[in-house]
Structure formats: C-alpha cells, structure tokens
Amino acid sequence: MLKNIMFRQWMIVVVVVFIFVATAFAEVDVNKASQADIDSISGIGPVTAGKILEERKKGEFKNWDDLIDRVKGVGDVNAAKMSAAGLTVGGKAMENAPAKKSAKSKAPTVSPSGQETKEVKSAPEAKTK
Image 1 (spheres, rainbow, N blue to C red):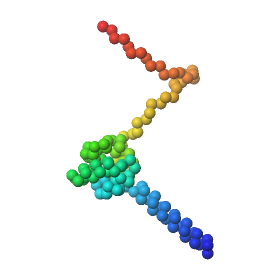
Image 2: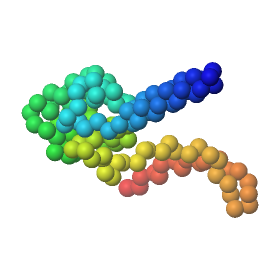
Image 3: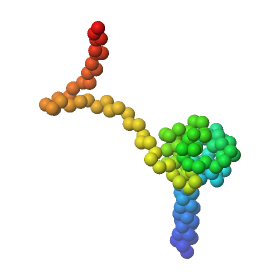
Image 4: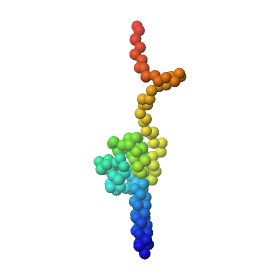
C-alpha cells in the first residue's frame, strides 16, 4: 500500500516537471504575446518588452526584419538570440541568424619543424616619396 502511494506521488511529480519543461520551451509569438510572455524570453527584459509592445500598437510585425527595424536596441545578434530562446514573428523563428562571432585564437603557431613560434607583428611599411 505504501509503495502504491509513493508511486502515485512520484508520477505526479513527473507530470508536473514535464508540464513545466514543455512550457519553458514554448514559442512566444511577438504579435500575440503579453508583456509577461515576451519578458519571459531569455535575453528580453521589461524595457525591451515594453518597446516591442509600443511598436506593435502601430501594427503587427511582418517579419524579423520589420521587428529589427522598428524596435530600437534589437539588432541582428539580439534578434537571433531571442529567436533561439523561443520568440517568433508570425509563428516563425528567425532564418539565417548570424553566426556568433568567434574570438581570435591566441594559440601559438607551430612551424613546419614542429616548434612553437610567437606571433610577430610587422612594422608598418615606410612611405616613400
């Protein structure tokens, strides 16, 4: 009997966790969402959510480019992050999101002989008249 009760409680916990996880990754359409829904997207705070809603009062966003053009502070990189976090425009995620900029590698260069070499910056060339 005790095992049966514990199993039921465990199943309830599993169902609640599943519902939470499913809603945490739910898509939020910028044209239909409330401020709280937009603010729930990772990377969007109350100020940006407010800007989005103010612009939406002028008309729905046609696409991601329209959102980027109309909402100050939302550029290609931020829009790509918002899309990855679940924001959609007209039910569509951002296509061709720009790739993240990679930091320059500071790994040492290895010569053909297998020895490590340091990066040498060349001096600017002298101008001749």
